[in-house]
Length: 173
Image (cartoon, rainbow, N blue to C red; front, side, top):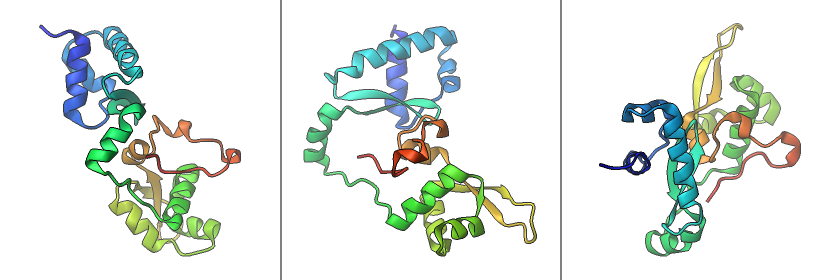
């Protein structure tokens, strides 16, 4: 019989995405036990001896390549991180910090049209329509997605750096 820690590791490996505590409860163990196992697993993987690390992101946990193993992964897989244009990063930052926000508000803040950029961010799953503004024409309101949190390695929007700390968003990797 596998230990709870081994079961969690297998689930995280197979999922390939963040797995929430709610999902992990399906293992049939008490929440406290699952949290203890996650903490132990995180400690086991922290040194990088196995090449992976446990990361808390988007309201769950996922396995990621440990920074000590990145050179090996890059040599073999030659990954290219997702690229976003400067305009896309600007609009994404505005949405992240001011959501929910309408297109006209984004254009007023940026001083330029954002229509093409919004389409690109929607296609990439980084933003979504979260509602309609109570105004003439009922303009769409935009907000970030769970995918946004995953891509930028954030557990929640509260993890965004304060605006006074400089550039708000830089792609990791």
